[in-house]
Each structure stands twice: as C-alpha cells, then as structure tokens.
Length: 249
Image 1 (tube, rainbow, N blue to C red):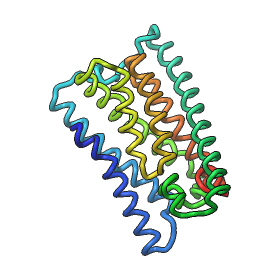
Image 2 (image 1 turned 90 degrees about the vertical axis):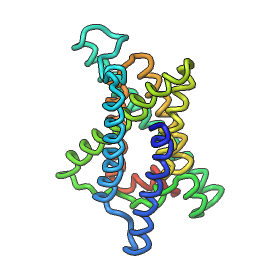
Image 3 (image 1 turned 180 degrees about the horizontal axis):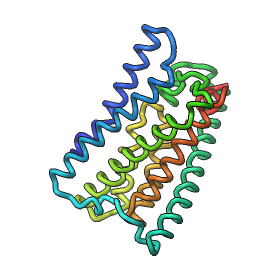
C-alpha cells in the first residue's frame, strides 16, 4: 500500500495531463469548472476506498488513525469548538500564505521571464492554463464548493495524515521524519500545480501533520483543510482572481 501511495501522484499528474491535452488539443478551450470539480474528487474517492479496504483488511482500529477527539483538550463539546476555531484559523493562514506565494512568483516570472510557457509550466504546472475565472454563479456556488472541499479535504487528510503517518510511524521511531515524509508525499500529489504548488502543499502537509501528531486526532487538520479548500475556490470564483493567484500579469 505504501507503494500505491508513493506512485499515486504519478496517476494524478497523468490524469490531469490527459484532461488538459484533450481540452486544449481537441476542444481548443480550457476545461470547464464541472470537469475540474469532478476529476480530482473522483480520483481521491477511489484512492480513499482502496486505502479503506486495506485498513479493514489489516484490522486496524480507526481511533489509531486519528478518528477521535484531540488529546490536548478536555471534554468533547469544548474540544470540538476549540478544534474548529483553530482549524479555521490555520486554514485561513495557509490560504493567505499560498495566495502570497503565487503573487510573488507571478511578479518574478513577469519581471525575469515574461510570459514564457515553459517557465510557467515548470513553476505553476497545469494551473497556469486554467481559465481566468472558474465561472460559478452566485446561485450555485455554495453546494459544489462545499462538497468539493469536504470530499477532497476529508480524503486527503485520512490518506496522508491518518493512514500514512500511522503506517510510517510503525516503521520508524522518529516522528519528525514521519511527518516530513508524509508531507513530501502529499506535496508530490500536487505536482500538476508545478514547483510552487509542490512546495506549498508540502508546507501545508507538514503543518497539518504536526497538528495530527500533537493532538492525536484528524479533527483540526480536516477542519483546517476544508476551510483552506473553500477559501481557495471562493477566491478563484471571482473574475480575474485566478490570473492574480496563478498567472503572470
């Protein structure tokens, strides 16, 4: 199963590459928001089911994977409230960090390399070819955004922070190495975002991994991840923000 998770980023990268080759090569236009909202959650749900079947086969206790209240806090009600607040705060902070990183890269890319497609592809991957606006209308934006955020965040946290950290922890006693390895593997699953996306997601994976290790629970990381995903897509929904967030001016 570790081999599957290690190779999974290549599957994700390959699928997104095929999606973009098809749309740009045959349809001569960028993928619609419906395609974007369907492809990645579907990939993650399939991976989630495969990992879940392995967990059931191994006979692991789901509490060992972080499906419990954080141990740093007290009774369940206040634990939940505190975890949600901390999770939202971390998610908001990571969103601002990622937005800032793409602004810096866009500025430097424009200044030194102009609109070089090869350079944009290296740094920002498939995202440099997304449409300038996702195109969701106010009346239908909330359900797909929340559903996308919930599916992606839950599946990613369960696989890379719950399952993978527990699996790696059984192989080494150095928890920092475990968190770093899980973060790198999580970051590599976002290689279609280019080098900048890989570095951002590795950083996010490390921070979420630390919260899971400290609290022995996925609650904060899942809430944080859902918040982050929702803020990103809500930001990109606004006209022109995708170019500001991912593309050179």
